[in-house]
Image (tube, rainbow, N blue to C red; front, side, top):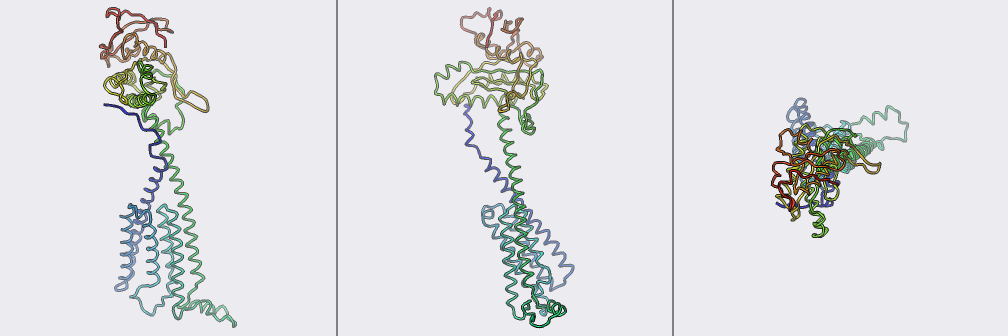
Length: 469
């Protein structure tokens, strides 16, 4: 199996694309909510008509309820389609308001014919248009709300002009203002069944536009809030995904949510130091872009191994990888997890290729008290660890060169492993910076690692070396 380098960040989906998709889903939810709200209102109206009207007068309003219900069902099931989201939603809203205007303008034909149609404006039917505009606001589409308001104003003024054109319709212009008309005459004229106050209708049309403007502003602000939340969620996902390649996702999530690195602390931890063997020769033999591809593919796979074993990668420098276990969150099995990760890394490079190339690694594992936290200045902080265990892990990694081994472990790690992982004492060596010789252990599975050429087997168990990194 060959590991290829991950694609560059520029190939990933942009934040704006993701946020737009979130907003589109919210719009669809809004249309569905508006459709279900309309259906609920229509059911209530149907119940009212059935309880307050008798046949045949009840048939007309019931037919209107059925017609608007079918319109709502259409919106409920087709709001996900692309044509609806692009232009269909505007046609649906315009048709809704137009049909409502027709229903108001031409009332129930089963009513007494002596009932003047001009009385339509005395029945407060305009409230249905306000409800219509309010339901459109649930779609999170400011432009659609404005279209609903303007369409309502146009249709309502159009209905007013139609009624004013009917014979016998009275307005304020028909009041004889040349004579001495008193309040009683004005009231009598106003109460005529054929009277239409066109000024009031203009005010209602303007109120529809103003209502739509206010609601569209509110919807626009709501969209901005949704946008910011979606953008923040996407940014957190990207940060968690980026951190999650080097630390467990639970740790990445806690860091992102807290918006800061964990506070500095002192704790015993196991440190794993891993380096690519003969990396200089690899760089000389391969083109630079190939070397970068190898490193990207290798670190991508190695990061997955470390995080799978609850480790945290605190540093990648050149071809070296530094990981810590039991930080920044505690792990009761941190020693065995570190040893398992070391063996998994050794198995990884032994069985797989990275961008078509085979590599070898050297690994040192040491346990001890370390100090961990955010280190750096205001411009840049990084989470890292310091302590004797870090230095010892690096020196054990380098000591692999002497033994021709892959993994070397310190005595403290071997003791805490408590036979959960098979380790055997390999040698006791003197290491620079240590006052006393250090016992070095190797995993049992590494016993077949090659020895340096010319070194007798008998000398391996007694070798003393001074290691410098």
